[in-house]
Amino acid sequence: MYKQFLAGLALILPLLANADFDEGVAAYTGSDYAKAVAELKPLADQGSADAQHYMGLMSHYGYGTAKDQTVAANWFRKAAVQGDPRSQYYLGKMYEAGDGVARSLPDAFMWLSLSAAGSSMSRDSVYTKEDLGKLERRMTPEQVAKAKDMAKQWKPQPK
Image (cartoon, rainbow, N blue to C red; front, top):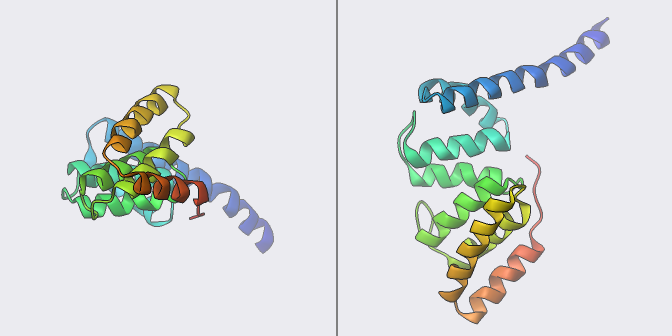
């Protein structure tokens, strides 16, 4: 009986987490940022890359929480290392500008490269590749080589 209970609980918990995520996204799109934070932060703390991405957005723009680029970069990094292309894009742009992180063109190039390669939307990939071209023109050949090597060796990390 106990094993059946645990098995049932194992099936229900992901559904409940999904419901919280869906409610959080609905709150975010409806501009109810306080509710979005309440729904998404626990999921982000548990390692959900999608929830971490939204927490990054809210920290980046100051929606429902203090506007804090360092906090935003930390949320984006948590999702980016799991392979989330949207967060990789934001983290790359933050490295390019030095927002919330130390400015690093090789790190920016690496994250933007990963984002372009991993994006499921061709339009996003095209725009990101345009950003990469502009960024590459500002970098030394050594920086570009280092960034390409970093991207080549990168592997997603599970939560």
